[in-house]
Image (cartoon, rainbow, N blue to C red; front, side, top):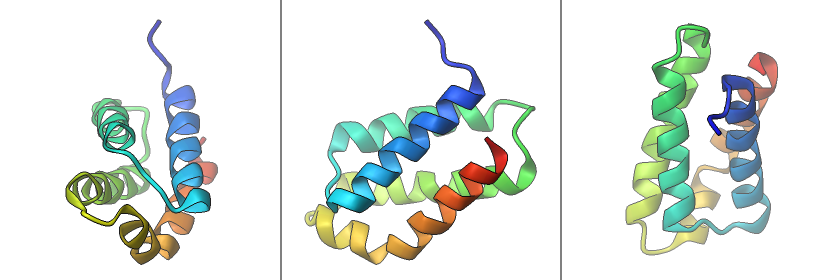
Length: 92
């Protein structure tokens, strides 16, 4: 079953919220974020402002996959994650 973009945005928010609250992220979560973002960026229904946030989340995911300290990585991005979740809420 393929998710529509609203469900993809909800899943994206859920993963980011969980990483932020638990200060922990796995490689598979980062990879899932990347797959969701690639799908969303290809969708014409996604607003341009949100696409910029998605690109930033994608970079966060790539850095997170390669980070030796997941908690530190997430802490460094804490305010960004809050802003991204607000953006996702605005457009979902």
